[in-house]
Length: 259
Ligand SMILES: [Zn+2]
Image (spheres, rainbow, N blue to C red):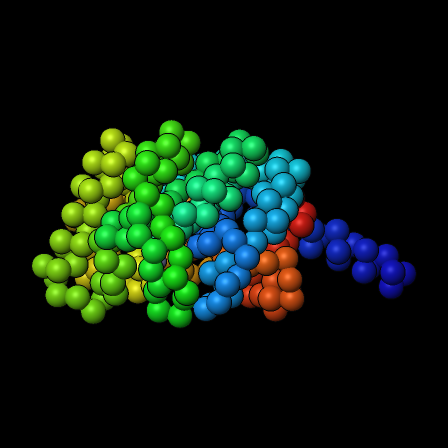
């Protein structure tokens, strides 16, 4: 009898999870797709791990949804298609071109790369990172037939600490510069180091961006604020993922159950 009750509870739990999670999407975010060289470990996912993650999602019949479309669906209150996810890369590392781009193409997946314009084509380090090469304009142009590019400001500075005119300049100049390279409209923004406040958020809207990515963890649904898009940093398939399991339980449950 006890066993029957337990089975009934598990079945009911799975139905509940399937019902609540099936209309939710998620946005993955990565930095380097390369072996860890130093600095923050979370800024690196090896190309093997990255491919395993994409392969797994492909096997579970997940499709990518362009981030612009996801944002437009939230804004226009249109349903988010089931089993969809978006992929974002921050800072525009060159290994996004050499390692991630071929893997994404192989699975028919698309992504958005957020560029800090002053860093394009350079090799430099950020706070708590080692020196890494960034994408150059030729690579950006080539990738833009398949990926979209968003703004991550000009300097990768903390917008919440800047004067209004300075922040405004970072937002509008970067948008124009990226447009010049890709020849496409730049609709998305990503807050450098995840820092923003209500004034910064208002400026992002005012500049004409349709949405902005944060570093908050969570799933996306029709009630998500498009200017505070949560994202999931799916780190290595290692112990750190297990540590995060509880925090990101809905994400893991969703992909484990394939819903
Ligand atoms: Zn960044």
